[in-house]
Length: 382
Image (cartoon, rainbow, N blue to C red; front, side, top):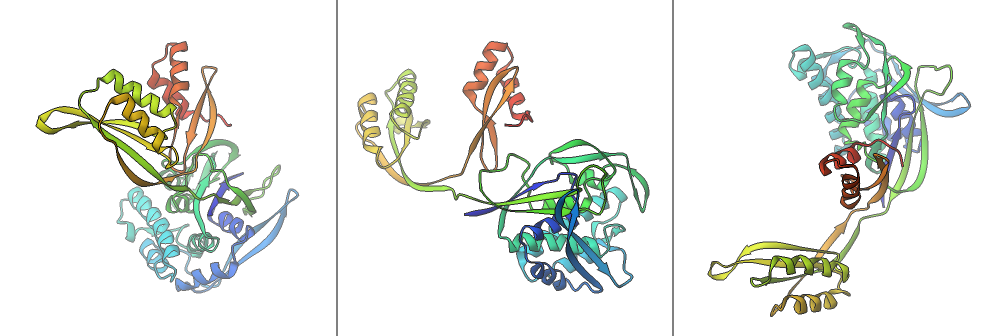
């Protein structure tokens, strides 16, 4: 099993909201505190307490500070995060802080390590970033998926004055993220949250099929009149990839026409081959030729080999045992010009089904590449 965390930023996302939601979902607070203590940070305490808001009980993370250091240079925070003994936690925390430093450095024309972090340089930022990394590690999360982030309008007040929402640093950190507009005003996604999503490699595609586990609710400090201000995390276990031994059958051909080769590939697929393909090669005496390949289960290999022998007239077929790691995949359907196009999604990539896109292209007169692009960009829910 592989543990997955799905983040649903109902009203937005901040570092403290994500930390509180992970603790609410079962991350041990002791592990979070221990990781933060490794940094050498002094004069702080972290409490994660139940909060009832609009009929929903979640948790709120609060950092209490007893020393006067309210801001630091980025290099100081990075050095502190690097002291965390668990290297996986340290790597995520350092990556998040470096992302903030690089963005702030570009915005202010300074070297990343030397840039002075104001709102982001206090205790809260280090506690939230190290805490989230430690919570994910304690929960053994191996993949994070995030739903579309709601982006608020209006302004946010910073040490540099009033800036538009999202703040410039947040906008830069969210490059490539999936976002959506919201009726909420003000800052709905913080730079800390954006940097954490970047550092943990959050995927914004459809969440994978998984066996549902615990759910956690992280409550923000802002009070909304008509809804709970929460971020939600759902934990689940994904079935492992289908790993099995298969057989590759192949034969060299220099006297079979292209028409026959195309027919044989289709025939082998219809006969039970998992895949079939052709590779152009130069054979002995400089003759052009092709290698016909077929991928089959061990049980189907004999029948596939007989087909290859009969249809091509070849004098021999080679066999190689290979191990295939088949990743989990799922399919959804979107509408393009009122017609359905299926899309296949794996853990790292998705694409429209070619045959469906061809049907739409033929019936609408649109170029096939346009149909494929429209289907890939569609945000229609399943």
